Length: 309
Ligand code: CP
Ligand code: NVA
Image (cartoon, rainbow, N blue to C red; front, side):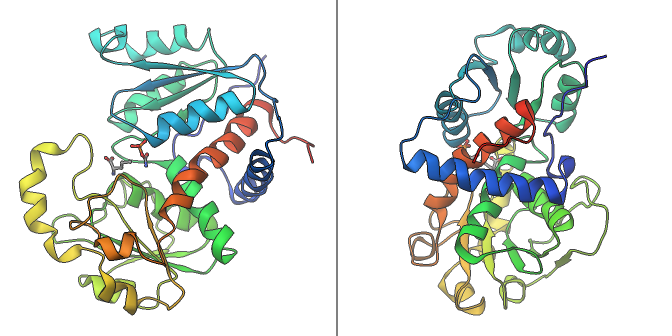
């Protein structure tokens, strides 16, 4: 019997030891890329990327990453494939997974990607759902480690919407052993069940964002309105006015605190321009690391642990 494929649908799909391995592989793979050294462990392998929502970073990082690993990436969207015309997800999974070695999906409900994975013969990677964005947290935590060392025991302040990226930080805190201080406006609080939390006490809610950032090692935020929730735009803009990460908030964090944002950002809404463009911001490293960490993830899901130096 062939082994069932390993999927990456939410952050907790991998364990602490596996993350330690992936961060080490990300470092080695990135160093090799920066030296222009050819590394083709995925020669003749194909990644299919299915997008039901827009993307710049996710598409580019997976497509360039597959190319650099010696493989190929194929882009599909709902507009001009049968996926947008009502073909059952289960049927699509059966067919697509017979023609490629891995599938990355960006879609709406988490249940869609779970149904796809149940019927897939190859690993399925979550490229963002309404609930989670595990590839983002993978890159963000690698970026933190590059700049500040281990994240274990550190404090991350999440300011704004309790969205897919926030949920993923909360899962990551449980898996890797750090703390998240969350501040959201009333009515937009974390839903622990939707976030897939075990309830290990790794996050705390603060009504006042200034209290959440106090003493934090990392301050992070995201758009007030995520893709798929555009109808709530006006109400959210009003509700989130006091949840902009600004210079005063950064001063309340540790003096060496980093600022992160998964991007795309709206300066003057969730973050002030002088913060995202300021000296504590590592957003460009964060974006670039999407590619390096996903290359390590693809290598791991397709080949397992490798001996490569
Ligand atoms: N951060 C992120 O996932 O960006 P894209 O929407 O551009 O892929
Ligand atoms: N929370 C945002 C992240 C975009 C990368 C969204 O889902 O639109």
